[in-house]
Image (cartoon, rainbow, N blue to C red; front, side, top):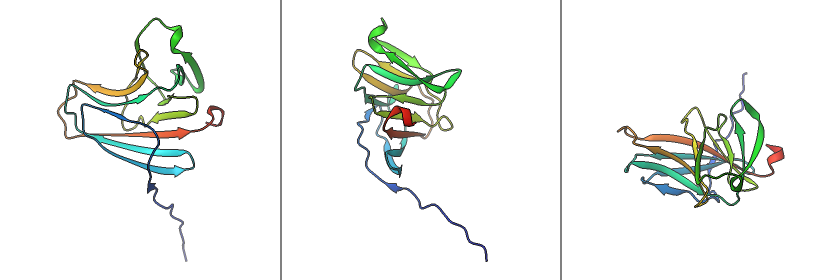
Length: 150
């Protein structure tokens, strides 16, 4: 007799991060995958020239993985730069928005640079001048915890 163990489907769960919707009325679902790890499904149809979402930055120190060095976390202090906004390509999708909060975009679903607005303290994932298509399906992982564990 053959048996197989199926993983239980993740249960929908509330997340404790603020997603500011931009130019759309998305369907957002979140699922708890394990303790302090959530999957966020963000499905939307662009309604304006710029569409997506922003997350408020809670610190001026950002941790992310640079191109050609995806295995390491690098720290940048937004105060060290003379710009008001910048785009980071995020080759493995990982970026922090606080000392203990990380978002990881699923690059298999969408490959977008993260937009950082230093003046207004926002981290954004936005499309501009998007083609007319039924909808976008983005996935992000929200991880809460110590950066050394991840």
